[in-house]
Length: 211
Image (cartoon, rainbow, N blue to C red; front, side, top):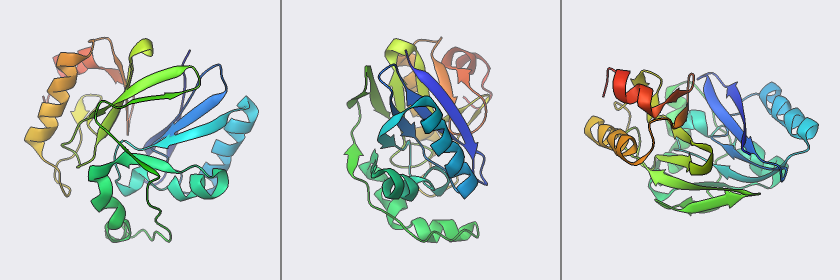
């Protein structure tokens, strides 16, 4: 059984997800921990629940979804994975962060790249990556079919969609990515977004005013 813990963190109110199962292994999606208080809350959660982090994944490489990557590398020896099309954002992370008045001291390269339709697993849980550009090049969703859940990053929000006015954003591409999810996945699929509350694909297909 998949356990989902959400930490809403950093100045962008980004959702960082910790997923675990009965094996006590866990993965982190979009580690955005920015402050020591946020990092301590995460460490305490692992300790209280006796969890072992084994994988760090990012739906895309915008800075608000990447703040926690150095912490996981330095504290847990846990490198991160992104889609290869995210490389521009990694290489220019300090520049992009400076636009928001944020100083990034360390930028680490990914330990591996995620491929479209790649099957991934931890503990007793399997899932797959789906390439979904539009908000940013390199954007992926993570789909847990057995549990009926999707982690959408900044592609799709409750009653909204991701921005397309940032570098490499494109509305037509984003809409195409979302419509592909509507077509290929069940309507009852629960969507956990990079910001804000959860929703379902069925709700968004019927009521999202941007689609």
